[in-house]
Image (cartoon, one colour):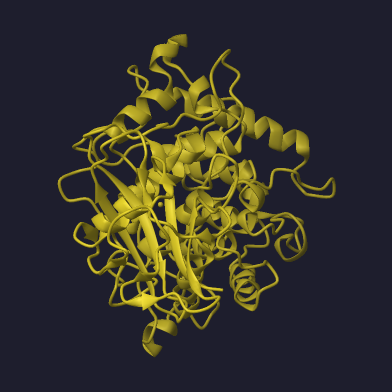
Length: 470
């Protein structure tokens, strides 16, 4: 793949947290000093601010600069503080939220990576991805691309990057309180598929390889290896896991001793280094010590900082370039700042600006979506987006499950609920009944599972998990 294809590639993957996703503190022994990293971050933020349009936007039709939100957050800058000419009415967060809430966004023919990209960047901007507006729930949008014939994949399985970025979005974009909003059963399904696509050399690429020995034997890609590592780690896989260790070994094998660059399939470049470093960051692996400190005393972070124009702050794509690239600048800054593929939003500096903005209640009569998983306790996991039009500011679990029987994508998420009315205890879902200690339980936004009742209150944007078991 050549350099000229990189922007469309980023659009596709971008068509591409709290904790492990934000590793900003590096030891004193690191090659790039804390002072150098601080300067790189400050100058990088200045450059990304220069990319803001006069109307306050970073995103628009087609390929755009919205990945800047993940880099800004990683570097400690709140999107609400980014304004054109100091006009706070056009701050980057508000403008982006308005775009995401637009009925025609992202297009007439959206793909799952549109919603994954938006969830990661909305989260970094301080917009709750599940509560963008009365009608927009990005988590619900992503759930609608679950592949019932190939559980664990999101979007066509041939486009493996859609599944990787589903894991990054669903595991990385946590609740406002910092909790995992999706159940571990769903994250485990994603982990299984990502593991199955790991190539023999320890890395990954953008296409499906599972079940194809020929594909599994082909050379992996630096960029996707970084993303897949991050996807596993934000889904709960520890950095000591064998698959992460193999991925580290693959990246180490591609390290250029004299510069700290990774030798990517299409050559040494900032974007590939940025994705690899972000993958290491997401797993809590320091990219400046151990396996990633070369015999010449160079690290991947050294290479990235060497690619930055100062004091301008932009990063060039190739070492020989004479002008900065917006995409390289986003990927470079996010990595140098210690970020993975998203980051929890910083506290705003703007007086009175909240850290988070979110739709607080349903709007009666406004159609929306809710994210639902149904786990039968026997390995049968169903995932769907439920189309729902509320009649009040809250709704009930019974009403959501009733809607899921006929208005779920993919279909078949819920075939029936007992009882079919009232507010009492749910005794059966899809024909599976309570039995002794094994009963249907429910969780919303990662809360503790409790006995499921039809009358349980469901709020706007709740990510609902239904589970049968003790």
